[in-house]
Image 1 (cartoon, rainbow, N blue to C red):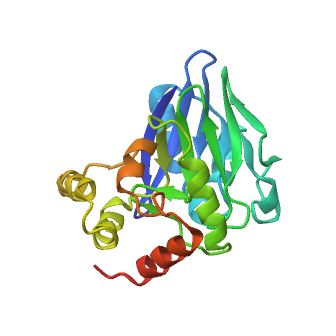
Image 2 (tube, rainbow, N blue to C red):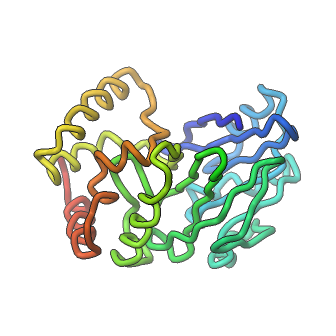
Length: 241
C-alpha cells in the first residue's frame, strides 16, 4: 500500500491510502476535504472509500464533501452511527474492511470516544489508530474510562513490534515532554526527544511510529495497571511543560 500524509487544521494528519493492485484509494479520518481531493487528483487516484475511527468533527469534517465529489462509501464505528450522518457502513469488533486486495480488521478501542475503532492491516503491519494511541501518548478519556484505555494499551502492545502506527495528530513533542517527567530515568525517551525536537524544528513530521518504539518510550503503553494509566492521564491533562 502507498500511504500519504496530509496535514490538516492545526495538528491533524489525514491518511490517503492507495492499493496499487486494484487501483483503489481510501482516506482515513478526513478532517477537511480540499487538500485530500487535491492530493488524490495530483496522483491520479480516485477516492472510493472513507474510513472513520470515531465521530469527532476533526476526523469526519471532510466526509460530506469528499463523498459528494467522489461517491466514496463511508465506513465507521456502528456504535457512533448517530453522530456520523454520512455513514454508509457501521462496523465493530472483528469486522473486515477491504481496500482492493488488502484486508483490515476492525478493533474496538473505546475510551477517547465510546465507540472508537482502529483499523489493523495485519499482513501489511499497519495500524490506523485514530486518537487512541499516539507517539509517546494516548487519547484523552472524553467518553470512556482508564480501565478501557488500559485494556486498549494491553491489546495494542501485543501487536508485532514492527507494526507501523498511523495516528491522527502531531502531538509527539508535547507528549514527549511529559514522558520525560513521567519516566525521568528512561534513556530511550531522552534519546528520542533529541530526534523529535530536531524534526519539529525543521518542520518535519514525527509519525508514523511503531509499536516497538512505543513500547520503549510511551508511558501509557508501558503502564502496568489501569490505576497507573489513570494517574498518568490525569497528570498529562494538567501538564504545562
